[in-house]
Image: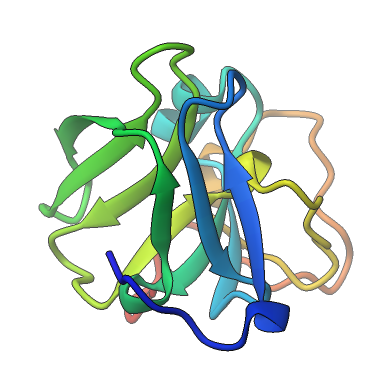
Length: 147
């Protein structure tokens, strides 16, 4: 993680539910994904996960020491999942297949994200009855070249 970031006006903060872990990230993502895979459904205990993609060198842990849980992805990479040791909130994921970026769990950001232009991935696993907006970019699985 980086010790310096761009202009503070271009950054935002986030953290876990209990406040033990706090971080700073860019205000604008490289990409915003709504993932409908079964792993994100389990991780979020909901219909999907939201990943706010940033460059690793623009992300900075300000307070606390997250724990990591590791799993293999469908594409064969290792995914390290950061979470708070105290409250268990998932904070970000970092993949061995994408060394320049990490996926901030958007629900951990202090400011809500705008999902208008989010890209829906793993729609082949989407829960029945969940409507994806007309015109949204969609991929039935993980498209190549993801951040």
